[in-house]
Image 1: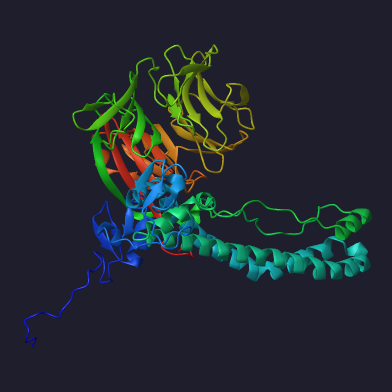
Image 2: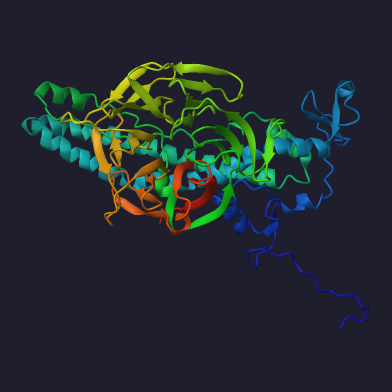
Amino acid sequence: MDKLGISSQYKARQCSQCQGDTEFYCNMCKHDLCLQCKERHVIDLDTKHHDVVIYREICESITKQEICVRHPDKIYEMFCNLCKLPVCFRCKEHKQHLLHGLRTAYKTNRLQQKGNICHIRSETLYNSCFLLPVIKTDIETCLTEISKRQSELFIKANRLKNLIDTVMCDVKIRYTRYMMQRIQQQKRKMNIYLVSIENYEHRTEFSANTPVKFLFFIKRPRVTKIKETPSLSQNLLLSLTEELNKQEVINLLSDIQIIEAGKRQVRNEYLLKLMKTVVIYRSVKVTGVRQVRHISSVTSGKFWINDGDNLILTNIEGKLPLSDDNAVLINRKNYVLHQLTDIVSGWGVHTVTINGDLIYIDRDDNINRLYKDNETKSTLIKKTKPWKPRCVYSSRSNGDLLVGMWKTDTDTGKVTRYNDKGQCIQTIQQNNTGQGLYRHPFFITENCNGDLIVSDWSRGAVVVTEHRGRYRNCYTGPPSGTGLSPRGVCTDALSNILVCDAITYTVQMIDKDGNFLTLILEEETRIDGPRGLTYDDETHLLWVGLWHNTVVKLRYIERQDNQTGK
């Protein structure tokens, strides 16, 4: 028993999600987090944009006194905004410059680096952890692959066996060593890269009480370059042509070319997976339109929406950007940031480019571009009779404009590809047998593999062609045999195709080969049928526009749990 009456018991602050000790704090969730829970928090798709800081930072801990490198008998007191350097009172050359307090400068620069730190945490580190095992696997299988290529060489050059035996010995000695060195070098480069990123994150997290070190650290040019994974080539393999003669074999075996296979990337199927159940986050009434026919995503929560008569730019999340002082708040549901009334009465009649510009079809059947300042507008493609543009889509891969056309007198359709200058570079209209592919395109989009997907209302089908226009497949409804009346269509990061059906009032998912997978929305949309779709590539959220001016936000994709991708 404590005779002095003073308790000697102390209670450490624990993580809000487990029994671990608190090391971090989420300013958005207001949760205490341990190291393990923090790492899960910053890569979770729902919370990866949250502001997670080291716990000491929210306590305004006393900063350490840091010695001036130019005057060792003094400590840093201020920060020179002009020179971007901390200074002490003896640094006379900065007297006439604009000076700020160290803590203020630290907070300002920390805020400026917030996006960079967030990207490193949620994307770069996560993707790199999946990429490193692939490199290790390549190292393990490198000798096997080389042995396989050796066997192929023996088969193709049987008539020149003596020559092959002589040359292959040289290949095995020289090129095996060279290729192993290249892959080992990639492994070392990747390990150094991961250590550098982890060191950067460690130094930024634990600099809450050493602002000068943080300011010196972020001033280095290499810090701002930590954005993506390093440029690493894929496997280096040997290859020969199918038809060989003596001279070709001699040339190939005496001068084997090692070709770079492109930058290493982790495919989305290793990073993402389908959830067992769909999670519906919220349903928002979008006033300003009578119905939601089509949605084009600008940023997360910010969309262009049309109802057949009006086209509005709205912020469904309800957060008014600082630059949009003239935005109108309607019924406390959403902000209407801009409105157009010259849009043609249709469905998939607008799209957003990778630069944030709006492309839409006006009432004169011209295709216009409204730049992201919402003030500058130009006509990109003028009407070409007798064809009428019915839907548009801006390619995310190369910026091409895909336009679904309809010819009224013959009730036939086609897809025309334009470059960014409005010049026609491709037309897709018939399959290999000369039959028409389309009748009345309603919506058009592009898949991750370059396939073109068209929602054709008159055909009651979703028609898929390859990038060059060769017919791939046609989806006409689920196995139940209810048929299909397709409306909005989009694709996700796993190359699945999602389509709204006006018969069953559902959102159906099919794979890239046209096979039915599952229903995304079913019972929830029996009254307000789904019409428009858009998939957010950054947050991996699906936004569904319903008939009675409602937008539903849902998730059916999540990240893989571990580095094995299982």
